[in-house]
Amino acid sequence: MNQLFIGIILVLGLGGYYLYSENVTLKENNAKLVIAVEEQKQVIATMKEDMERNALSRDNLQRELNSAEAEKSRYLGILSRHNFEKLATVKPGLMENRFNNGTKELFEVIENETAKSGTSKSTDSDN
Image (cartoon, rainbow, N blue to C red):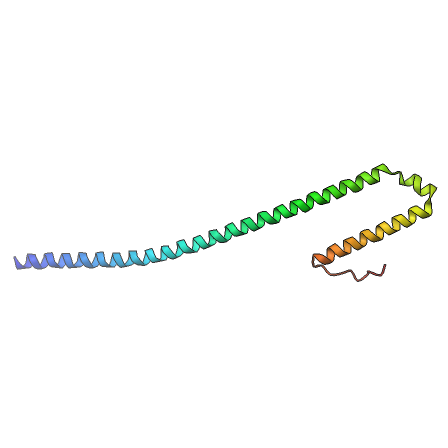
């Protein structure tokens, strides 16, 4: 009879130890999962901020594109309304000066825009 009680106590002790070790393992895993969830929340928040920033950038770029398209349309309209060949034949000096000044102005605008974007200035800027 004593052996039966000792056997029961031994089985209960081993079962309790097993449950205790499982509880410790589960607590450690739970702590790791809590940390992982917090990291995921931070990543999600960062991704949302990046998405909002990208949306703003996209909208700004779209506005700039629309503005450039409107300006292009305006210039094409001006060019389509004039017969430059006829004007150049009738008033060659006037047209030459206008074209040269317009080309110079266009090159200056291009140089200023490329300097803004961080590219280096041309070494051949004397021409």
